[in-house]
Structure formats: C-alpha cells, structure tokens
Length: 176
Image (cartoon, rainbow, N blue to C red; front, side, top):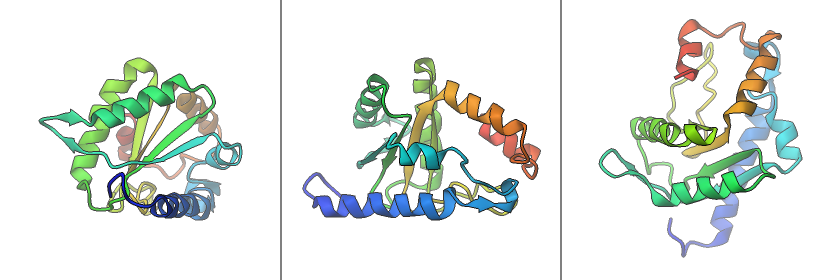
C-alpha cells in the first residue's frame, strides 16, 4: 500500500483490527482465569484512548528502524491523551515473523529510555499461552505503551488467576 491508496482500505484495516480486538482479545478465556487476553483493552478502547495508525513501515538489520516509525513514536510520546498507539501494516506479508521480532527488539531498545515498551502482532506469530495464540493478529502491527502502566497492570493481574496457566518459558519471553 502506498500513500495513494484509498482511505477506505485503511478504514477496512482498522475495522478488521477492532473487530479482532473485540471478538478475541476482549473476550473472557479460561486460559486466563476467565479473564480476557488483555483485561484492560476494553476500557481503553471504549474511552477512545487507542491511537490507531495504518502505515507502511520497513525494517532491515542494516538500516534499522524506519524514520516514519520514529516520527510516530515522537507524536505518541508528545500526546498525553492516548494510552496505547497501535501501528498496523496494511500488507500482511510485508515482514516475516523473524523480521518483526527483530524490529520489535530494536524498537524496544530505542524507546526504553523514553519510558515506553512495544509489543508486536503478526499473522504467523507462534507465541501462545496453553494453546491460545495471543499475538496472532490479522495484520502485522506493533503497539506502544508506557512501561510504567504496563507494569502496573501486570501487578494488578498477579493477584488474580490470570497467570495461572502461563509456563515459565511464557513469563520469561514477555520479560525480554
């Protein structure tokens, strides 16, 4: 997709992701103590505090992060309204799963000093909790949030059954 692609395609991409969030991420799941995969996203989404962007972005080890991504991070960091920014790549084949994992690692290395953390989703992501593929999204994407809020939410969940079926490997993976 390029800048000349119609806005209605971008709207379809956003609607597909919102539908995925509502029908999968926000739904109670027995693997998570009958809580949603992300127990906090429904409230944040309903409050309109998720900044959704449909953007083409690239990544190569040699050239590192796309300057467009850095501009989006700057924009998000300056805006105090949104809690989450989700950047959705409209081409499901634009980055391999390995490239997206490398992208996310490099992005986290870059944004950690800003107090931010990124998570990625990919149609082929194999990360799962007891067979539930939590990051297998319809489009390649990454979300950015304040690490302080993510840690606060994680602490709240520790007193629930949410992490009951997570393996040690799962817990170590998300702490990298």
